Image 1 (cartoon, protein in one colour):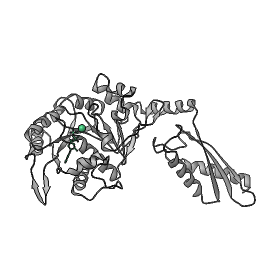
Image 2 (cartoon, rainbow, N blue to C red):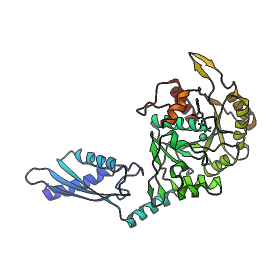
Image 3 (tube, protein in one colour):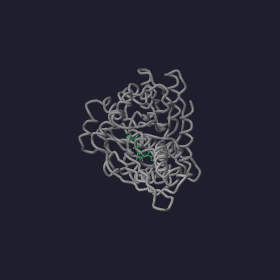
Image 4 (cartoon, protein in one colour):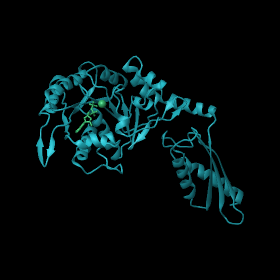
Length: 373
Ligand SMILES: Nc1ncnc2c1ncn2[C@@H]1O[C@H](COP(=O)(O)OP(=O)(O)O)[C@@H](O)[C@H]1O
Ligand SMILES: [Mg+2]
């Protein structure tokens, strides 16, 4: 092949290879996103190698993930089998026109709520409880971290807009990247998430808090680029009505998971939070009993009484006429609070892998049970 032809061949081949590099935030190929503005290949004098210049246009200036993208592009160029290539990556930012067009395209495509499209693969679990303080957020956070550690593409929405806690439980201190009004969720411990707590005091926080809960959930779904996760978890505000109804309307395929503690005062309101399924079509997937026992040197101490989870399961099964199983009984574990407050879900070790503790084992089993149909 003539050197000129070989250069063109390399450019075309590289374009093809770069189409397999996925933008980590948008989950799309960088060539589809128009991020590869040019590829030019020139033979190096007398060596048989080629200098390859790749002009990359990032979507936002100072994109925090530009290093990841650069590394992947370098990797794709260096692994080219038929010639020795020397990559030179020139980074710049897209023009505002080009970015608006791109965002408009992405939004148009997503205008139908991505989670209600027929054939959507996302399993949605809305974590509810009658009252606060039963560990709903801790369960959501640890369950999300478990799914992510097991390799599922996992997203979480902190729908408890007044009592948000996911940012703290995941140690998130950053704000989501804003692409012309479309927000990229923040990823922490492998989970893509959004919370009003990431916008403390900003205009968006006011917008999302809005006059009605219904609107804020819709906006979480519409304003944020979710891609198509395997699992979406919602940490609902405590209560027995409004929130779950909003979920049923915005996400008809969501499955409700009711969290309770063992004592009667908690289980009674927990039952009511599940009875929402009598008003709106919604699957109640099951019950999680939290703080069930304390393992004291192998002996299970029932600190908060017994039977709450079982009672909620039986009463909902009776009332709804479908099985609402007790899916898990989670131990009282001081770690949950201590580690949770340090910004790492307690089921993970400090490397972000699933720990080998009984607690992590319980969450893994719970995750598996939830995914069974
Ligand atoms: N299994 C558990 N063992 C020990 N502490 C727990 C457990 N679950 C939750 N907690 C603690 O109880 C408190 C309330 O939990 P949280 O998840 O914020 O509840 P909710 O979201 O229902 O209001 C937190 O301090 C949390 O760390
Ligand atoms: Mg909470």
